[in-house]
Length: 261
Image 1 (cartoon, rainbow, N blue to C red):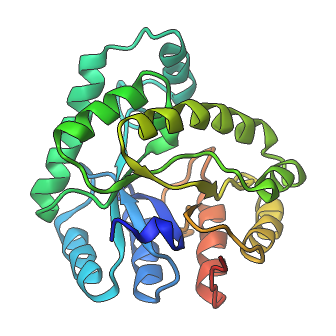
Image 2 (cartoon, rainbow, N blue to C red; image 1 turned 90 degrees about the horizontal axis):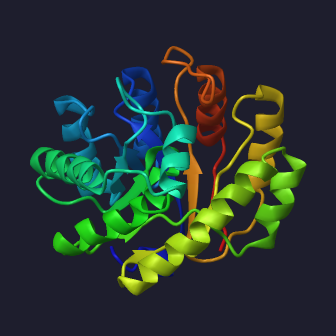
Image 3 (tube, rainbow, N blue to C red; image 1 turned 60 degrees about the vertical axis):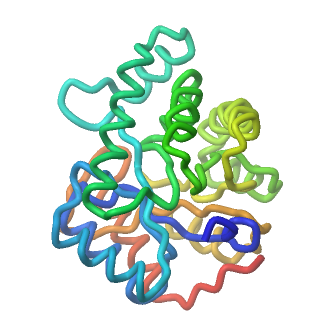
């Protein structure tokens, strides 16, 4: 399983565990083999859905990862505030380490094994200082999975970011990914070469156009495609409206999507 990223482009749905309606939509996509895995909030996923994911791992060989969270919840800083603190290295390293250890331990207790991969809610795992703490913790755990790198060498992604109005976010992630990639290589941690899936998630009309453009593309090997499918009945937020999650769910459900490499 650890060599998967050397040969494939895979579709991973984020935010599993945060909402039962969205979780049900993701489970349906997993069962239909429309996506290849989910990234979970280990402290939020319930016992029933843990059981379902474990069965799907056995029957469908899905990937189950840890969605490392430092921004969603009571008394947690927003992503912009956390990034500023990370850039100025004003974060408490022990706090970051303890948060990751806690979330990894909860994952292992619920599933019986360590995650197949690790990424971060709002990409926090790639922030300065945080990415170094993450690498140290994973090394101590003798982690054999992979870590999502949010950069890409694919020129198509650059063109799509301009065309579909997420160029600023694309540039920020490219800069973060450059330094994160160096850290991952230094610590011999497996990671993807290319990353796709940034979309205009707050604009339903643009989203439908961008989804078609994304999945009509060919992807280089070792590509992670991030997605955010869900239900219209699920929780909504300013950056991930439930309407747009529902659009992505219906798009992934209705098409026979063969990711070309």
